[in-house]
Length: 282
Image (cartoon, rainbow, N blue to C red; front, side, top):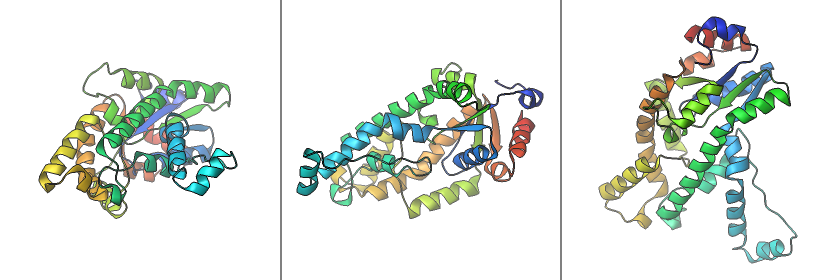
């Protein structure tokens, strides 16, 4: 472990952590809070995906849609206008919109093959962004002189890591740079996330094998063809299963680091509180 005990954590002149867990439990909240406190560099995996790995795909899709409008098509051809995605670390609408949802095109759905292709693009972009963690930590320290580093991962990190084996290359690379910190939610948090998602379903990234299974099950249970599926109905149906699928994977990843609760995170009021919380779990 990067910091074998509380003493080594407190004594470290440079601290680095990697937060992981379900989306909505406070990873970005605490990351931004520590930046405001000073001394911490926030490396957002989702932001890196949107501004690097997926950027050109999103931009090309914007141009494709604009070209369907004769006026915009002519302006683009004349180089009179340009289109650029606007990605924020607090708003990933551009990435989510590109990922889309599978199902009936009339309801905004994508053909399943296209949806699967975009999922694969996202998978590769997220893995690349995670692989760049150590590089960004070095840049934060040498170029900008930030002593501390926080890697704010997306909820889908556990889909690309095999946490059941001791030598998963991606997990090995990450834990050599940062202390893995699982922000664990309880049943009440999980239910709140499900209810929030049901009110406003959003695109998600899934492990390919999981996606294939739930898609086949949904078609069979509802006796539907691919182009008959209501996109929002499918991802609502899938969301709770995805959370259950991810929970044991997060737990297996946590054996390489420490576990804190979402309530622990929301009780942090200062950077010192955060340091004490980490130390108490080591």
